[in-house]
Image: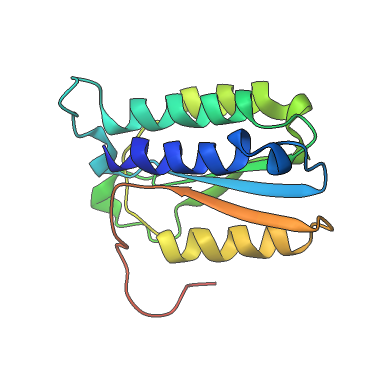
Length: 156
């Protein structure tokens, strides 16, 4: 439920505000938690990962088409028992969302929640990628249900 509430707030900020909705000079990174805990069922019967994928797809569909959007995921490549704290990947690189929203939706639909939760590493890499964008406005949107699987420094 926290996922949907977080995305609702983000959606309202990015899409509903007329000033921000018109902003062509904006870059946004979506980072989706696909760790094993996202398989937990919500009261609706839907899993957290299903709700998160639907919310990411909706955000990509509704955000201004000129916004440069990229999509990262973590916890989706290695099973939990592997304890892979480096399990994060850029799935769709920056491009105007009008041209990459279909790729983002397809990549989101294909994700399987399965592994650890390397939030720090994922956000560090997302921040590095967005720092190279020349947009006047930059934002990272994290869609997660959990907490970091690792404490301490971020592995290279």
